[in-house]
Length: 379
Image (cartoon, rainbow, N blue to C red):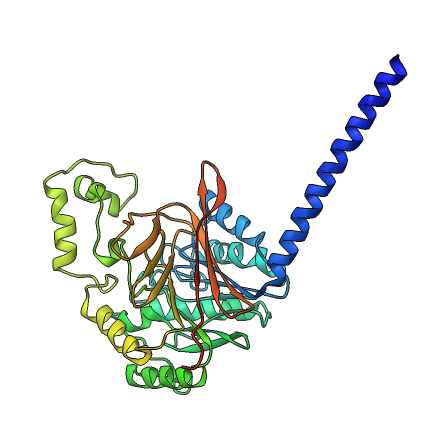
């Protein structure tokens, strides 16, 4: 009797194990089929320039999404908080080196190319040492002797720069902070292909003509559309606790005076906010180049959240690599969140692109939004 029961238990265990193996094989096969349908993968992480639990979680999860030989990583600016790369001999030099290493090391270990786009904090938080600090960040990356690790554009130049990811997918990156930076930004003669806004616009036209039969990802730090504070939208917290804009821990209630902060910010506009003439001028001039082009995707950071905005344009905002701030779900937002996270763009075999948003909810990262954009041939 004992042997009979033991055999039954053993048979039941083997049957259960067989089912588990079949399920695992099915999942592995499904994943392989999905990966095989992807021509190229782009991982977008913005505003990740602070080594904290949020940054560690975002980068760690994103690194697990790397498809060998198909994945390229773009950091969308504000790569080093609070004021960019420490200059040689400064007390913050080593710390800032460690911050940027923490971002590229996990992906380079997996052989994924990594590109850093400049943000306003990389330009000395739009301060007078901006050009020196952005050039130092660039030179530090070059010192690593890794051809698949770089800043784009390089040397404090405005760009634009093209990165060909596949036959039908190209990233065109430019330094949007260069457009709004209020201090001297002239580089040494012969350093940059473009030195004025007029030359930059002409280069955009050349790159559009060259790549007009492809899907173009236009990458910058500043978004062309946003429902966050840089886009002119503010939370109740901004009205009641305005000092948190200076320090996240300054929860001093100023319910009446606090409402002056959003008002003043929209009246006396900062160049980092979309309402400023330098910012809107950049948008208008670059938009005029790509007007009517259907296969364009804007990607940016700057506002510390995740947004997918779709009207006559597609705007991806992936800015919650290490920070979070107010974002609302505006009229054209199909998704908006302040959760830590990042975005993946997959080019599929039919040249459509699939956007997948991952965010941390209840302590774990989950897929929270997906959208597929068709490719329109014959432009």
